[in-house]
Length: 279
Ligand SMILES: [Cu+2]
Image (cartoon, rainbow, N blue to C red; front, side):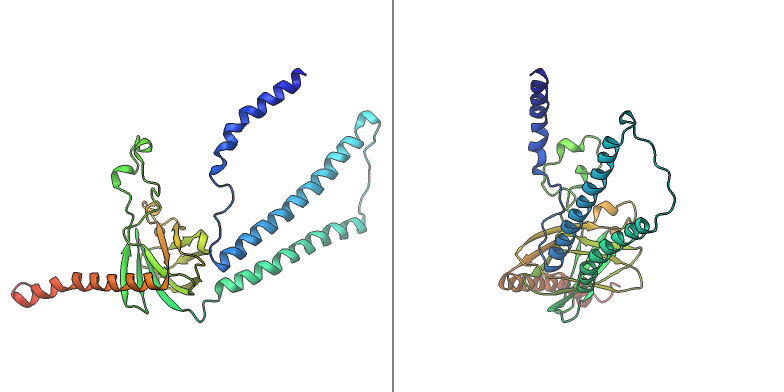
């Protein structure tokens, strides 16, 4: 009875830890056809691993228990058993083949950036992102917008009040929902990685190369990611924020951005025309 109470106490004390489980253990919820496939693969393969774990450890613990020395078990002495060797080679081979088939299918689908609805060129820098909307003629830079005083201070922990600490930018990448967006990813200094888990994209940006990737957001929303390749001292400070909007909202955003870019460009022209001496 006492043992039972101790057990109950131990379980009860574990409850607060379980309550913290609001923070996710699994990979983030998938939001594109590709990330859905990745999620499916992740779960299927985890179940395969779990089944292997149960079978292998089941046999092991049963053997330890049933053939223990106190029962008078004597160690077996044998060499080479062709049948057993063939079996333990074939089973893993078949398991790997079963895993490889759907995984290869997903990798091929990930790499197929053909027939996009629109294309965005992504250029990585130490430590920001440049986005060129090749169809809409827009260009924007995205840099971290978390205030500097929140970062790195020894007592910064208590001061951090913004929900998306280090995962927020001044200019988000806005895209239309339900459209196939092709990304042409490169970098201007060192290797970076454009990584947004919920969109199922993780692609190196390599100086001198253009790599493509694609995603199609199924639902409107904000998807956050980070540079996935250690690229220097502020590698952790170049987040990616993708905003998927309806077609109308996207069109309105493009219009607004164009007006902003035109306004930004105008003063420079005026200065050079009004005062040609200033060079
Ligand atoms: Cu980087």
